[in-house]
Image (cartoon, rainbow, N blue to C red; front, top):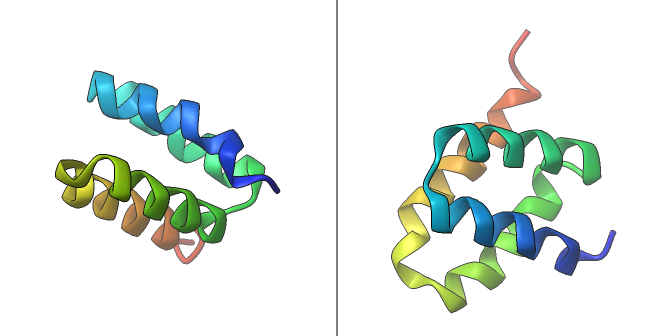
Length: 70
């Protein structure tokens, strides 16, 4: 999976800070390759947008724990 495919979705969610768009982003990540790809792409975004670090960590944590929930 090409991690650059995630970038437009991340940037749209970050710009909007809309919870609905963030939920769609989480679903997109699951469909396209799971939390591992999400982590790789978000690392690249953190370099570009350092102020989003905590927001991205929350999203990554939520995505990582989704698979573990019954």
